[in-house]
Length: 191
Length: 191
DNA sequence: GCTAACTCGTATATTCCCGTACGAGCTAAA
DNA sequence: TTTAGCTCGTACGGGAATATACGAGTTAGC
Image (cartoon, rainbow over all chains, first blue to last red; front, side, top):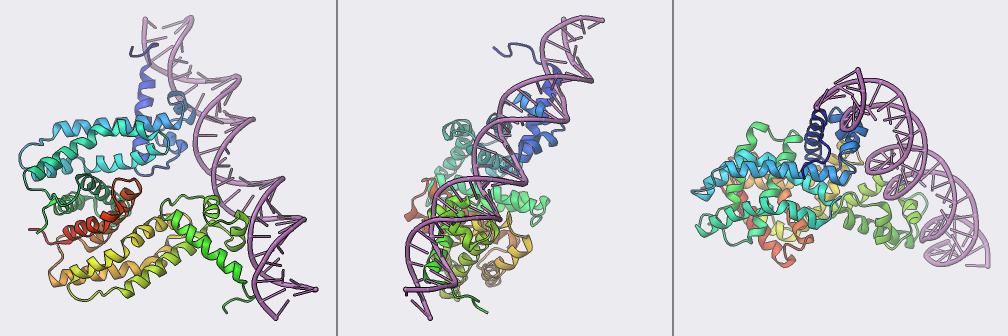
């Protein structure tokens, strides 16, 4: 059961633009308004409500969309070989996506039940954790700190980098280098 | 000109409790309500308004109080000797204070002019930066990343650690060890 | 070209929070 | 004990945001 009554092409387009705008704004500011999102999508507020009955469902749609993109990237990146190099590749292609998702998650936690959020976010989070574990087994990542903390710390660094960029304190071109260098140091076994 | 009309002792007590509650709540959630703060202080909302005419001044008072505590700690900590050890001492005695201040700053940025915030927060922020620079000069801290980013990254990690603790994903007793180990790795020159 | 689907404005109800007004009762301090 | 200062409840007004109701105009798709 896909759609009971067929959806028109212009509706599809509107929905796509709304979700894109929601990701863009909520990815920067979890408190972004429905009005702002509708305006950014180039769409009337009532049109938005026509497709998403309330804020919760809009946020969920944006989060799902971002996580799906994340899954795509994770599948496309070669995660085999030296875990350090794999992580570098991963960060290069998806650091901004992860940063965006962090803010979306914050927005989601205010509108959706925590269980639902975990359910959505579980799979992608696990993938990074698996990579870290493999690196620990291979002896190239530290084992003196809990894996859960390492995963979280990487997220906080990425989110921070995005924030620094928005504040103009970090040049967009420098971010990949800064991020990979920071994360590498954080995960390396201490001397 | 201290106080034109002398303030009564019970008023002083109320103010102290309000500021403490404001630090506590705003340090966790920058969006904490005036009602919540008054309730946490064990005081009626109107009493709070009797001392702080609006939210902005309350937030400022809380921030100033936290920063003053921060200054006290910074003065008490021995920042000489090996910068790595100095940083360890600093983090051990003030990581939670820094994390609290981060959230307070976020709250302040939404209510106070940016210039005022910088003015208040400038001095303490500079102290950490100075310590990092000294470590760079001594060759014990990395120089391949901008100092501004390193300072910010440390803040993001501390804020993240506080959040993990609140979420129950990190035990309070483990935090000093986790934080110092993470920051040390982040700042160490790469191999 | 007909029709159902879509767009979107205006108006309205609701909720939440901030801030003000008024006033009654209590308490510290001279 | 007097009085000025403090506490704090209730009530009110305003602004912002969410969400609903109604309806007029437009467009995609058969």
